[in-house]
Length: 104
Image (cartoon, rainbow, N blue to C red; front, side, top):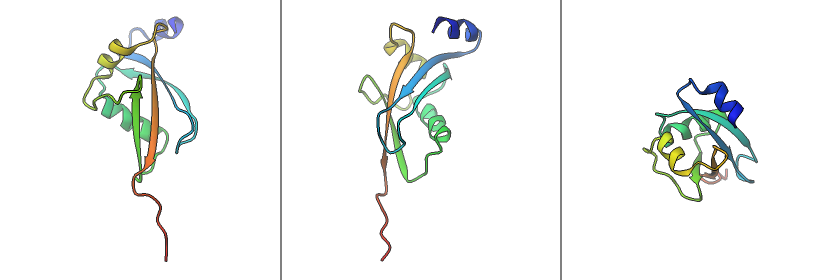
């Protein structure tokens, strides 16, 4: 963590690690460097684009098993919830919002 931080300390950002178990997207572990002024809602948008999530699926991010407000700044969530190692650990989960379509 400290080497990554030292390498990026002049940038306006924090380190975040997101991970999930088995879900509709498969199992993914990713490390993100996120700007401090990004909101949770904007972060979810970035994740949706990175994993190429279709419009029919919803994504939810959790910090310590809690759903953070979409308007909350990532920097505030980071400061309140970062781990001893300096990372903010988040989980994400998805759901099909429209269910399955059956052709008759």
